[in-house]
Length: 175
Image (cartoon, rainbow, N blue to C red):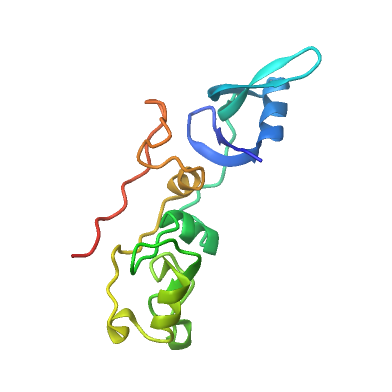
């Protein structure tokens, strides 16, 4: 099922919703379609709506300030684009830079995406102890960046409109 980005009336990213929920919001006139998937439409007996990729709420919704994006395994994999931080191959696991057995926590700055082979090879050691080098440094995305990353909208790859601020670039790799 497609995910749709929901913007506040002020164009701030709020969340993602299912395609069905996005269409309901548009049909109830609670949101407008800001960007649609080209050539795709949802049709019913008496109505036809473009398949929304980004919708904007008509009324401003006050949300509590979120200083940090919540950490999750899925979030780490998305942040690192499912690429292993050690070899660059497809990543399917999350590795703790400082192992949990040594006090490492589930945080954005202590976890990286890793392929199963490298995660197993590093085991219960730090990268230095295992003789492994991180290709990219872990970073903490802002809540807005985390939403855009989850939708695959990073670095303008999906053709984001100019009115939507792009997420902050990831730090360069470690040399």
